[in-house]
Image (tube, rainbow, N blue to C red; front, side, top):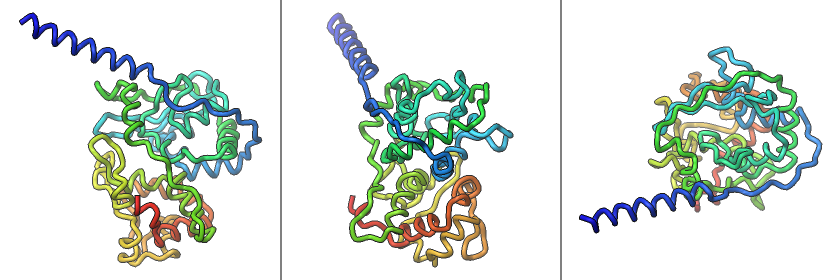
Length: 301
């Protein structure tokens, strides 16, 4: 009996050491100073493309822009996008641009804590310093809202943020946004938007039990989106089989109307209304071109 107790105590002590080590384990890196002058207009456009306004604004409740979004119900709990206004207490008014850079590109708070991947930061890792400066300049124009966003509703053990360090080690992938030699500027622009700011794979790729994306089935669709919605395959072969063309896909991303005269449903309605309808015709055509031609480099991964 004593031996059994010793084993239990030893196991508990080892577990405590492991948890302590994980809690102390530093993640990410300190961003280099960003001294570039930001372009407010370009930053506002990038914020639209990236879904910042859509996620961090509770439109149905009449919330102020970027003051906190509606809840996202998942198998791990309900996550509420935070207040991103310039309020110093409840928003990001006391941040500096390097804090902003670490949050956007690395998913790390100013205190060094990991953000939940309900925030689509895994797709923003290749944002340039100029992108960050532009976004920062645009966010500085947002009026402060002195109200806290709704707190996340996440039960144990998923409320332990140190556990996200393990998740990041297993499932945080570099977004494939770099240009491909031999491809057109239009295709490469589409690749950058689809795999980066537009984060299409966030919804259109299935996930495993831990919430990590199944890269072997990238863009193959997801039947289990938060809230009970689903997303169809947007792989090139499937799009072509359904008679999508560059013209009608770009049109659908702008209007929500499909070639059959039907309309997008589910969460894609919000994507069009809050994101893609604000994109330039050139960017919409670039996204459509990339999706319909496919990406052999991604398929090979």
